[in-house]
Image 1 (cartoon, helix red, strand yellow):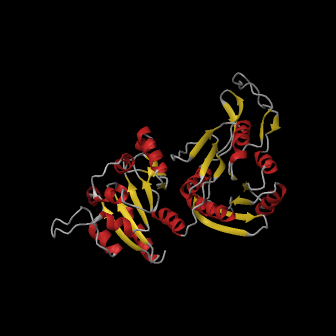
Image 2 (tube, rainbow, N blue to C red):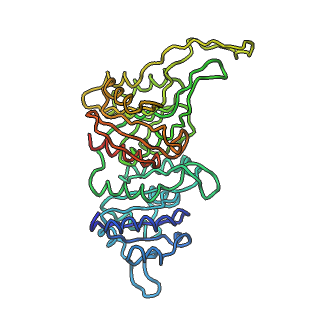
Image 3 (tube, rainbow, N blue to C red):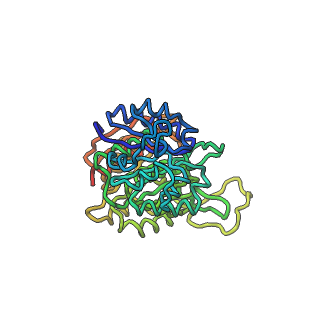
Length: 396
């Protein structure tokens, strides 16, 4: 990042307060940072703060109304190695997608010869609105890269997807772009979440997987430039991205069918789903009544999706598995790595109380096929997803 020219566009959303941290990250990396703010953004972050941290004058209007000096949008566009718009509001994204140009930032965007990256931020219903999805598709087709929003607390008081990616995540993405490590248009298959195996119409055998780790990996892959087939068991997690093809399933057999359909056209598979090992041999068509003290349910093995994918892959396809053990963790993970002929295996920790099902944090150890190990300490699942995708990218 030394000496790289970062042009940062700030629009009028509450997430603008985080931009102070993003500027500081870029400056610590010895990049040169200039900022353009929309008029509305100054309601959320002071131009004085932005100017002080970036060590450059901030431009808001086409001309300085005090001095009459013209702020030349063409000069900005020619200067920048990359334009990052963060937060990117629904209003600004809509204007970018539809050729509307009514402020200095938009005029600069339409004059850019080099890369533009956006980090959307808005409320969850706006983030899922059909018009927003159409605009995202248009921008993707125009060559704009999108850093997906994250899930969390929103300014409305709701909790869900639409929260701007954290400054560290944005900085990581930009670093990857600057270092020319953004991958070519390759396709990943990612499995996520649990599977539910029906006992009767209202009961099932399942597990505590929330799908958060698999979805975090998918977000990291999308931000890196991959196309993603995401095969997910029952989960509350959501992602909106033009390069995402999501396939919802319930049972292990349904997940197997989906994987068999998409795996031949994928370059890499990340099998993070917690697939039930067994299912009831038969499903009762009616709710089972509580008549007996002991209920005997015969179980039969589910298909081994990971083994099938490994055995049927082409030479160019990479395959990454996950292991969650409660004892002899490393021993069992390494045996799985060898037995299923994987390129990597990710061992989830069960020894840290903060690395839990349904939580935002995880702690993992990654082994490659030569049993080299990389330990990732307790951190957000998204950061672990970013680290894993970076490792996969280097191997391809």
